Length: 349
Ligand SMILES: *Cc1c(COP(=O)(O)O)cnc(C)c1O
Image 1: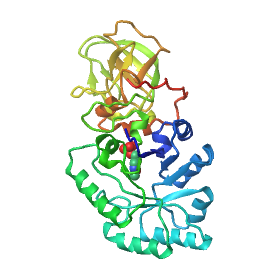
Image 2: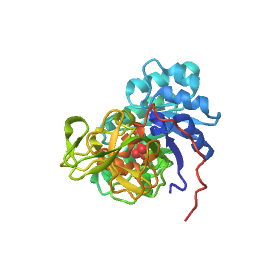
Image 3: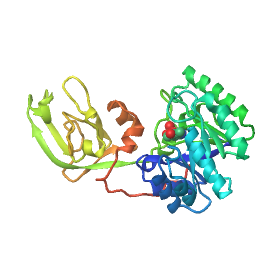
Image 4: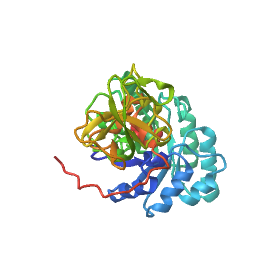
């Protein structure tokens, strides 16, 4: 979709939980040479995993006193304050080298970035040294809502910054902005969630294929009687004689407590043999209970249930859990055994 623009992959937070090294290598093989991480530690991990021609931006900026580390590992900070810029220019001076870095301007998210009224000072500082930044960047607050007025305001403010730095490459688009307008692309786009199969734009069909499949084992199957309750707090009682399966996944595994079922609110679901099985009662740390009364084929202990996969997406789970796919993916932690498989060759249909 980005055509002429380069793609820099956001691989922060362990590549959104997918695995920093594995995801970065796959993206490198697909042609990505630019990577965005949050912290220098993550940058060092990418540096160690990928060939020399990899370019790594550190979104969290330059940590005080860390310039030698960044230079040694060839990490490019996204500079976002005057003290950071001073430290970086000082490092350039002392090495007599133009060390690449991005200048990050805040166009309205009020998170990281130079204030817009600092642009003239920034410009003066870099000009004094004849320093040429690698990139000028900013970040949208509402790109997932394409109709939001803030998108146009931010884009206009970004253009006013760019006018002060002619001929410096620019970058503004996360996944959602990349998918919703050519005018957001500039010279480099920075998708994250879309690379991992998540939905970037609200209220639109997600064109991306799922990347993560997640299965959990059935630990026990049992019959319960009408009126019996399930789980902590006894928040859900069954209105009929039921068969339930206890599945070995819980909030410690990123299956959130907000996906619990109660008598007044339907909870999350899993898929067993292509049929949905709803969560009954509270999600525990290590377990959920799901209703299998209506399944055509009765599963047995040891069978695996689909938690994420072709029938149930990360965004389906997120919608029930009152969160976003990003949080589901980044919460898939420690206890899973993981296997990385070659993706099928993408078709253009
Ligand atoms: C995380 C991040 C991205 C990627 O965002 P997605 O919504 O996952 O595509 C891009 N730019 C910045 C500054 C980020 O922090």
